[in-house]
Image (cartoon, rainbow, N blue to C red; front, side):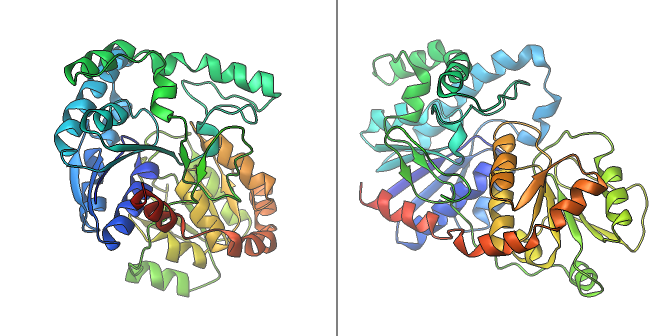
Length: 383
């Protein structure tokens, strides 16, 4: 079978999409991944055919806010153009994550199956949880009526593209659609998140596959390995694809770590996190195998991305979550619900409390599913 898997999100969406593609490929299928150019090495490094779409995400923080609407509409047109060309002959198109405006239409135009997959429960409408934080709004979980009201407020974030989507659909000889959000999500979306970390309380039809995890066998760099071997397990700080972050966050974490007598592994990430000084109690690293590293640290301090949260939970290590946007507030709440971590700020007291949760994090670890990508792949092949 031929599959096309598409995302326009950050690494938190590109990595699980790649995990699914690898599993599909290993089961004998032809797979193409369409994703932002930032992730070409991630996809091709795993032996998967890659097609870029849209601008380089790492530069997105520099966009003039007055240009956002025009850029968003152009993004929709780009998605249609790229996916239409890349999907020729595909049997199944999978849309991974938010704002997949073109994937379902392209699937309709070639008679292919379509699946929309979310990587977090609160990015799918439900009366049981508030929607994710967008455009500066952080929604507090409330009554079912309040939650649904918040979801209705977010419809405009999808409706902006209606005219552009329908103009592109007309080029494909497809009828117009009125409800863009429900069109993208479909009647039976998939939830590619761990059932324990991100349960689905309903209502509605949904396929809950478990998280799509990409196995990582890369060795740790020799200098990092030596640092880990030369003392007690350190703390880890990384903010993934967050290119903008709270000022002084590195200073605050280094200060808290030193007060607690803890060393620190600092991953630069897209925010280019850098310590103010160079001392033997911390090491700064770039790209790394989180699955291996997290099993060697005392706690993981991170932004609350779906992948980092799941990897830390699977490693059995407590987490201190510093949410910035979107689904990160949800993951912070889930970590606290399970008592495997706390939510920031990174004060010495909060960090000390986080470290006491190690036994509970160890207890939860064996229950994190690792077969989500395989379950999803076999189900897709049965469509």
